Amino acid sequence: MSGMRTKTVSARVSPEFYERVKSEAEKRGVTVSDVVRRALEREFKPWWRFW
Image 1: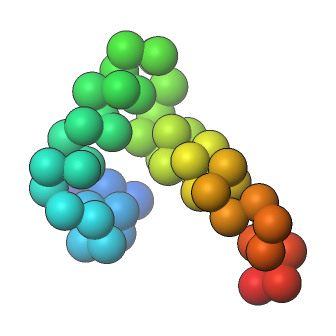
Image 2 (image 1 turned 30 degrees about the horizontal axis):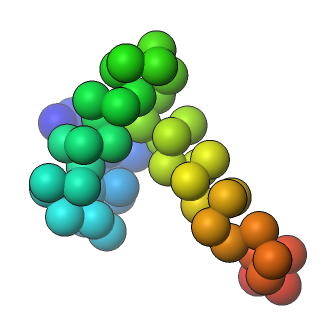
C-alpha cells in the first residue's frame, strides 16, 4: 500500500470496496485509478461538468 494515489483512494473508500476494485482492476489489466475514474464518470455523467 505505498504511493500517494493508493493512500488517497483508500482514505475515501472502505477497505472492502477498495479490495473489490483492486481485484476487478487486476482482472481487466488496468490500474485501480482507471477503474475508479470510469466508475465515477458513469455515475456522475449528468452533473460532473458543474464541478
